[in-house]
Structures are given as C-alpha cells and as structure tokens.
Length: 69
Image (cartoon, rainbow, N blue to C red; front, side):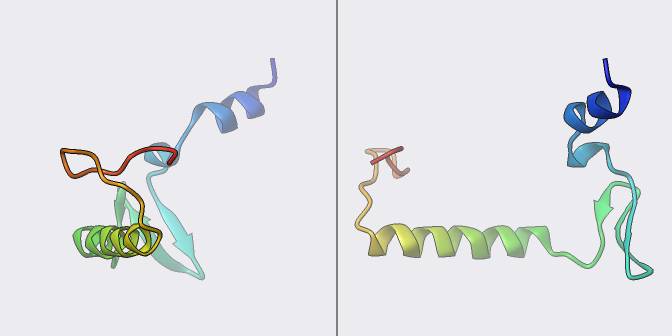
C-alpha cells in the first residue's frame, strides 16, 4: 500500500486546517478567511435557478429540480 496515495485519496477539504496563498491566509483554523459563505451560497443558488429556468428544466411537486432530465 502506498501511504502517500492513501493520504491523498482518503482526505478531503475538511482535513485541511490552514492554507496560505501568496503569503496571505485563505483558510485559518479550518475556516475560510474573507469569504461570506452565506452570500456565496445565495449567488450560486440564484445562478442555478436562472440557468435552469432558461433551459426550461422541470421542477418537482416539492419545488426542487428533476434529476437527469
């Protein structure tokens, strides 16, 4: 078994505690730095809804979107 491969394949972003880019912290003690996650989520959802509306993607009776249509 390759220990490096096991670490790479067995981990995800939640295992990363701190990240620096260009000498500036982007993630510190497990939390993103300078990112409003709630605002980003709203923007992504708005973009998704707009794209699916343009594509006339059908919704479910509960208001979600049908998979694989």
